[in-house]
Image 1 (tube, rainbow, N blue to C red):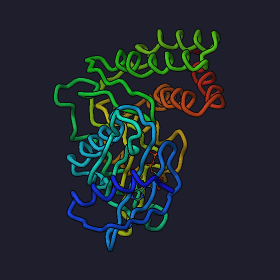
Image 2 (image 1 turned 90 degrees about the horizontal axis):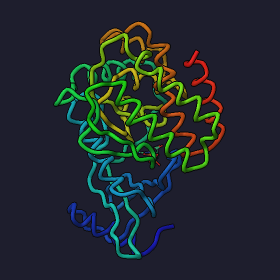
Image 3 (image 1 turned 180 degrees about the vertical axis):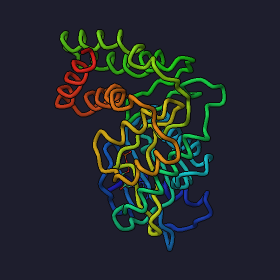
Image 4 (image 1 turned 90 degrees about the vertical axis):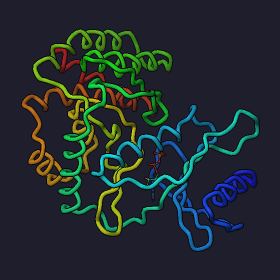
Length: 303
Ligand code: ADP
């Protein structure tokens, strides 16, 4: 399943962590969209490992930093990262990988777990104002394998246009997924964004950034654990909007979130705008069916 070189690299990494096993076992795990993933057993230790033969630069370092930022908020549980390796220029290089705590899969997420997760996410959003009060992050990172730009901006609408929608449009153009009619729809929408986002105050708080149901695990103690973030400091509405795009979050999640940190009026309209970013990214990563959703949301928001 894996090359001898990769196996050697994993064993070396385990040695650095004080685990002197010379034999390892990998059992593949499904569910990821981008990387290979497996449960790794070395002696009586179990870990989670995921790897990629041709990742974009520093992908796993950025994932580790994102998980660390969420962990620092002391709100939602994240897996402990033990090591990562982003490959080397010389070829052949072992694949890039990230090694972390293995979260044994518990039961399906219960309404009680969703209630707690809603509270924890609201606490994270309430208490994680961006250090400089701006929208962005100190580095760019990735949403899937797409570069996610995070240049600091004081104005949320400008950030959303310049760091979210326009880069995805440029990528779609390069990918041949931005026919003239779609480009013109999105350009018209961009003109409307300051008005669509203009009627409320926006606060830059830490967002998981890729919070869909596939990135929520349930540990054996029924605590939600979030994985695979694309963090940045943004308006929390963008986070809640994305939880609703593909569904799966039970009503208790929203009820408890709202009790701790109520959303402002008009969220239901802005939600579609925020999800356009993720739909454009899905169009770029996975292809045309998502284009139909992009077009219909853009048409609806242009009015
Ligand atoms: P990708 O980067 O390819 O999207 P994910 O981070 O979503 O991969 O991980 C792939 C799958 O592996 C997930 O759907 C989940 O089921 C499982 N997984 C992820 N992290 C862990 C972990 N720390 N412990 C146990 N299973 C995990």
